[in-house]
Image (cartoon, rainbow, N blue to C red; front, top):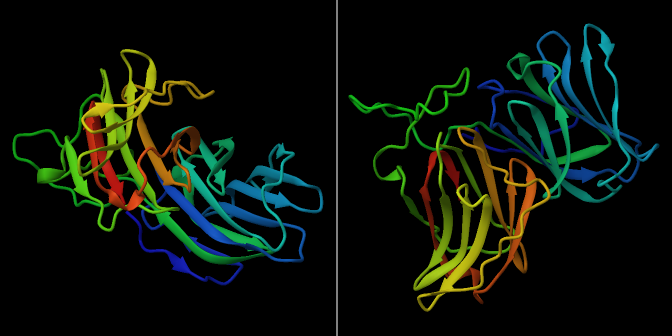
Length: 309
């Protein structure tokens, strides 16, 4: 669930996490670095002035520093000697919160991970300060997009994995259960992003995400636990094309009973797929017109929490 992007906020900026911070929360920060200035910071703040996660690009030293401020003291700094930000240039930061860490991507490329030193349930607000101007900030909570619905005599959640702490379990009402099909109104286009949040069942074999058009499948994304691979393909004129099976360096990025967030990004020549903030694969377009892709289909051994198109 998104509470709506905050457009053109003034820096320094501070906003509460209205539902708290949970596994699956996604924070999107878009803006530009000012032509002058040495540093800026994104802080995940606790209610007692502690900072659970301090993300701090420093142009004066060419480093990005991450740290935690607790009990009036800074902890041990973690440095990355790579600067994905540039003075006077726009940026997009995406911070995915998981049970174990914060996964940070910059301009849709995975950048770093920072393991929790303070429980995410103590985090109360987000702050941005320093040499940046902001275009928008969007906080997307897990499980949103569809209202919870109780089904008499039925389980609301797959018992293979527990509901997220502090957030009520949800099940898609009616036709939004697996298999899931929905129209993509207006088709796809460059920079379009599809976000799928869910969890793998306890004893999975396979699941797939299909981007379909009339007469075929433009992109078939198919994690196969029985084969320990992720198959990518397309189908045209009732014929499957050549499978792509190269595995990412992170290996099989899905696990039984574990939650996930899939981002499918339409770039100029390929679909780019990130899972939990980590780049997994690109799939070059095999159909000539993105706009003809008008259907999203999801099926297999998963439970869906939220789909954003």
